Every structure is written in C-alpha cells, then in structure tokens.
Amino acid sequence: MGAIYLQGTPALSESQIVGAHSSSIESVSIGEATQIDEVAFLLRECAKQDLEMLIEIEIEANDQVVTPTEISNATFKLLDARAACRDGRFAEAFTTYDEVLRRLSPLPAVANRLKER
Image (cartoon, rainbow, N blue to C red; front, side, top):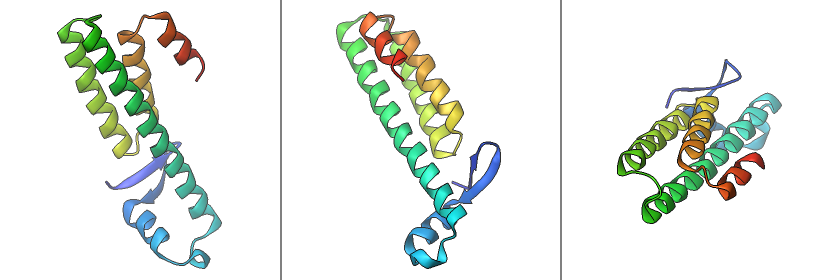
C-alpha cells in the first residue's frame, strides 16, 4: 500500500497504521492518532461511496436505463475509484465516484441524494 497522503503530505505508512493499532495506546502520539482517525474516516467514506455506486450500477443495469457500454464503463470507473482509495488518493476517488453517479443517474431521486452530500 505504501504511504498514505493527506492534504499532499505523507501521513502514515501501512506498517505504521498496523503498528499503531497493535501497540499500546501510550506509544501512539496525538498526531499519529489523529492521522489514523482521518484515514479510518476516509476509508469508511470510500466504502460507503463504493457501495452506493455499486447499487446504482445494478439498478441502472436491471432497469436497462443506460446502455451496456455505460454500465461497463461505470464498473471500470468503480475499480479505478477503489484503487485510488486503497492507495490513499481519496480526493481522486471521491471525484470519480461522484462523476460516475452523476453520469449514470440523471434521475431526480439520485440527483437529490447527491445534493445532500
């Protein structure tokens, strides 16, 4: 996985995160704990966005609202967003998720859900 970047600066490597979780609380500095919390929050948001996008792809495919090519493209974009999250490129991942959801779903209900974010 390598280093995770938050706001353009190296935060923690995967081994630091794992080590911080497996070591005692006293050995984790406040700065490291904050970075771990930020990364955990962003990873949860990635999972939430991923699930929402996957459900939307399935709905669109089942309802045959968009073409099979569009479904295929959305699925590949989903994989790109997953990779971006895994690599700590959270802004890129969230942009990809939103872009695909907007392209897939011109439906008012989905548009309203996107505005609520």
